[in-house]
Amino acid sequence: MSVPRPESSSIPDAPGAYLFRDGDGRVVYVGKARSLRKRLYGLTIRPERLQQIRNERRPGSRYATLSNCEFEVREAEALMQQEGVPVLDVTSKSVEELATTILQEAKLLRRIY
Image (cartoon, rainbow, N blue to C red; front, side, top):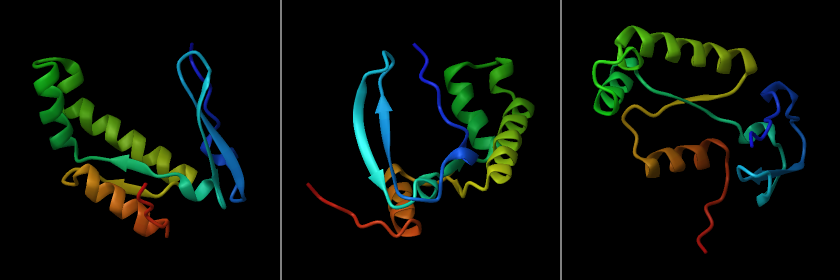
């Protein structure tokens, strides 16, 4: 089952709640935010690195060509810019570095449970 996602431009810059659903549509997480829109981030990667990753998965495929990777990255970045979504380059960031960057940019407090 596909779960519909709202257009990013329809997400308000106001307090609200959000739900994460599984593939069957069951709610698996409920969150809240002072500004839902400020919780949006777009991730990008240099096409050359994306090509390396894809060549490991599907060597020699059109999916892994540099031209295809350049096209996909360019289109994704244009969409994020059009929607006003901040973009972070993850080419050389670890998951931990990326999480720290988002926490700092969004001015969120890190909570340890």
